[in-house]
Length: 247
Ligand code: NDP
View 1: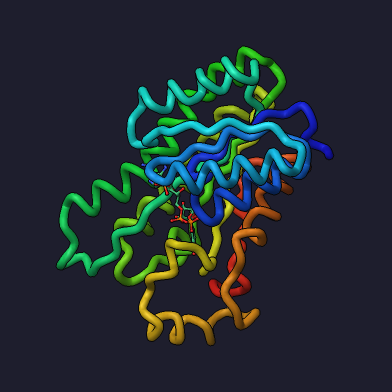
View 2: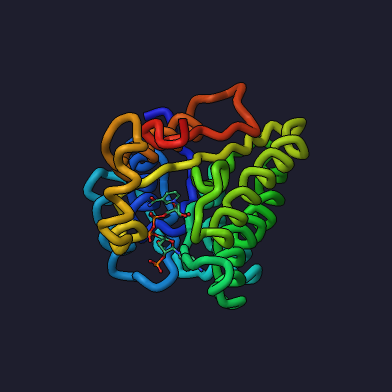
């Protein structure tokens, strides 16, 4: 229970990986703010699980593409728990298409959610982190697509590569204040986001994964937990959780 007394905010806590992260942090003693966008019931179910574990939580609806909504979410966290120690930027979407066919609105939606959302939430949390004078941890969920690139994902890969560059830059800015900023880059993880991928694509990808299987959300949460509670001398790093897919 290393995170006892700490408060964590997980964006996209209603989704597969976000829910696993929220539960892992709660199991370790943290109070968790579970952000959702459209799926209130899914988020409420995670809150129930947190409470069954004996933990404390709060649901908060916010669209991370909106700066005011992110400010409001951090304010609500402080009003409810009086502090914030850990921010997990996990909210994300994909709108895949070959560039020749990609609509500008699909470019905007993906970069606004996956990259600008990270900017909005980090900007909103920095002041409270600095005011508390007790450091702080930011963990951004990127993707292996942001490292290797992926056909049909120019928008997503560019946003996720941007998240890595953003992470490294903010780590440099905030190191002297004791604020650690890291990223996790998952490979193919079984969630709603990958559920609708064509079976043919999954069959093509599988042989390229050293561990010969897709990952589980809990396996991404293990890396996040390491960065959230241990990893005292780690900042600006990217942990790849892809079963060896990008080797
Ligand atoms: P899910 O589709 O299961 O969950 C996505 C989450 O993001 C949901 O909670 C959703 O909220 C939330 N979200 C979407 N748009 C917004 C928004 N504008 N504001 C706030 N929240 C929003 O996907 P995963 O759990 O798989 O993905 C989580 C993260 O992991 C994403 O950043 C994704 O890019 C990344 N990732 C996933 C991989 C995979 O294979 N699954 C691989 C690599 C990276 P709601 O449902 O309430 O609308």
